[in-house]
Amino acid sequence: MPNNLQSFGITVDDVPRARSFYEKVFDWRFEAWGPPDFYVIHTGNKQDPGVTGLMHKRREPVKGTGMTGFECTIAVQNIDETIRKIEANGGKIVMAKFIIPTVGTGVYFHDTDGNFVGAMQPEKPGE
Image (cartoon, rainbow, N blue to C red; front, side, top):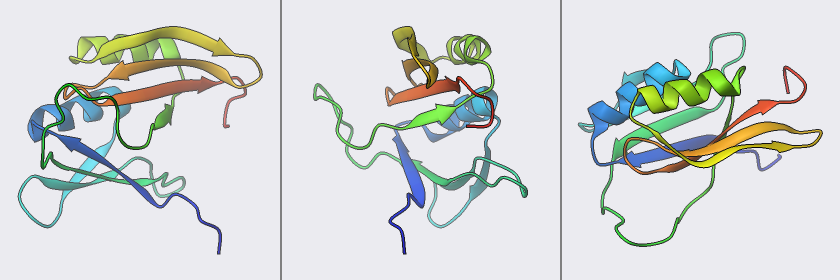
């Protein structure tokens, strides 16, 4: 059995604000599950389900420390449109748009709770 990534988690201080951000920027769907302020994130559809995510209230706010955890990058169709949506919905670009030859065009941003996230428009659609 391969050791593929099965799911990802996003911990936040303000669940409704963060949920709204990811719904508006990436069209993800959220399903209440388990304890209060805990959601399953559906990133895809029936034909292409993507990776299942989780969102829940941050247990201990991380203040003044470097990033701890996995760095995630979200594949997008149009990086310029994604940048516009990130900024329009309260996110902040923290590393300007860059190109990785043969891979794609990317950007790094902070979501509305300060989580460090990447977005990448693949050089070849569908990758």
